[in-house]
Length: 238
Ligand code: PGA
Image (cartoon, rainbow, N blue to C red; front, side, top):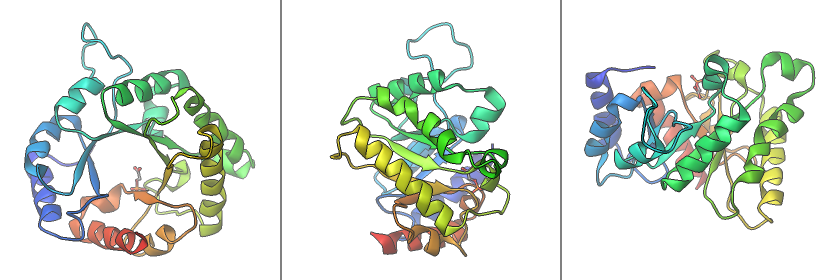
């Protein structure tokens, strides 16, 4: 829940003006009210647009306040985040609701980005693999061949300045990738992003870590210069 119309347009303009940020593989996830306008601004550029959430309802009708996958696609989105930890925390989103969101996003032609990750308590109790496995379980009900992205975001690292160690990231990313590949019969192209206090200073080492295919960036994406450095680091990995 950041930016206003002016600052969103300004940030998008700065990203558009830079070759490191205006290229394939970069997407911005904006608040819903600014999506349609940003879609116009980004038209023809390399930058894709993402929603930060999508409704679990798909049919038009009496769901006041909701924004459906079809509406997001119509407004120009390519991606939609699903199950970001703040949605899970503040809106009690269950796996059942998240599966609906995934399905509706895919049906509308969007690529859902399923966010998973454990809390500090779960990490310290040693339960983190099991927590993530349970969060991934809904993917078993997604059709083979459907495109989706997984973002591993340890809750304790989001917006806190604490970053998981490279060993912690490598361990869980390998687990997520294997889990998804097994489910998809080994043939799918699974992208697993890391998120949680990714910044200009740590992006290169995180993005160079095995099984890390990209980053989901929160706070550092609000500053075009730091986002640029992160995109440069990502560009080196291609
Ligand atoms: P952060 O946020 O980069 O500010 O930790 C990540 C996120 O909100 O997904």
